[in-house]
Length: 185
Image (cartoon, rainbow, N blue to C red; front, side, top):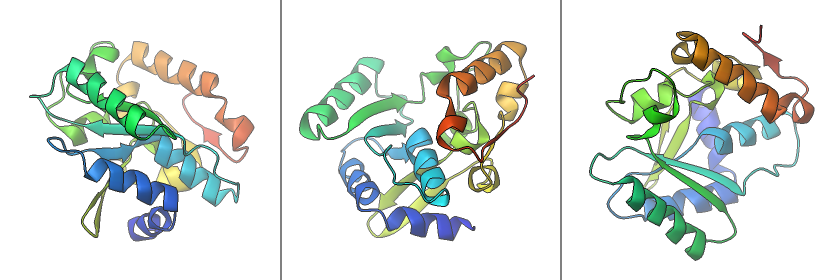
């Protein structure tokens, strides 16, 4: 599967299209649909499962001018105006604070590359009728059902422990038995 094929898969889903339209209309920040929302959708499609994970919506952006409180307010506005979805909005400017020994990120792609798993480090936005896919680690692991830590999480024992706990807690293999998990011991 190529990135173009992946974008076509996303475009074929009315719910993803609706979410992309909603976030493209947010003024003042450039938002992307990201992470588990996209990863789970791809795994469901490849496993030929009914996609039941599209209500949890991960939105990311990077803006040094937007405070943490303003990010929370944006999330609340989305929850009120589009209550069908469980919105989680994260300004990646602040996300380094959630990982041990992590310096502030310089931009969105750098923050995305530091997500726990390579298959989760994916983001998509729609600009008019064009789609922009960000996948700093590529899409090979995602489409091959492979879960492995990013270099950022491999580079520190505390972060690697967080990756391992996260993979166990998520219990992804119960939903997608074809998954192969790496660096678990």
